[in-house]
Image 1 (cartoon, rainbow, N blue to C red):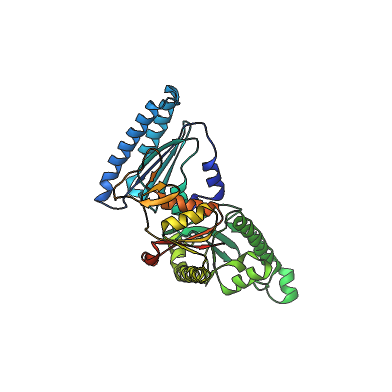
Image 2: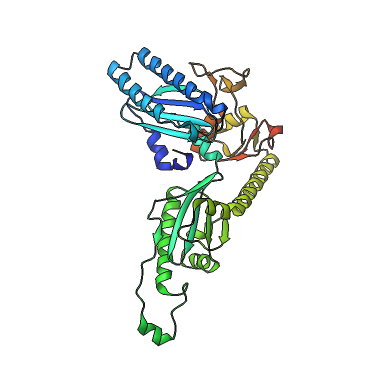
Length: 371
């Protein structure tokens, strides 16, 4: 699965407590040859490590270890290196497994716990800037979900929608001299009300930035009969055929997406500037970590490719030499940035990823504080 599948409901389910042990395996991967040739070897080594950990764990019975190992091996066999992104996450129980491919790197880890490790999934989703797009015409509406790298139709909340076909009405035609205008007849208006209602429900359940695309009269009618489209941060006034391929949808949306990203970056810069002026600013990993732990961070900005391994000492973060691996006691943490991002989102903070080097003077990460 990709990060756009990580809805609020899915995340809640992944974080649910399970019978021990739920197994989480993470590792970095490579998108292209020749680097991706090493990925299957690293995966086999981690699967073997997981087997050793299960066998050595006194809390895991022989039967449970065998069942878990079997599911893990099935998951590993199903991994296709040709679909690799920047990291791989396997989540395994004795009954099932999930395979996640992430566009953000993650360290090599095998974790046995009573819940799945989700920090890398959450951080990867935040980095991809997920969005929704509604393409709408007089007789159909399609909801899309995507990131800057790809887009796909979303089959949820009743979408895609097709207007009911009404038979021609010759008597009405004779009475008014013509067929009614497409975007003024009551059947079309009712269809657009249905689109608005269903879109509002989807956005309430899983809020994401919204873009809308369709002919200008269609977009105007959608605004007139409902409320959901008014929150759109980008509009593309162009026809929206029902069979428009995903690549074409993304191409038509690209200028609006770029403008949306530009506006978001400018908004982040403004918020950080105001925070500095108001002395409610934190810069650097240790300061931001403390603010997030205390629930004081309202906005956390992170450079796109910022990763750090640190030692946690007296609730402070200290850099460690490059190549230091995660310690068994948790004092050394390889994915502290992803952990911080997940904690910030859980506390209600906004998390945004910004261009590399844009926060160089602040240690690659900064926060605007609530107080």
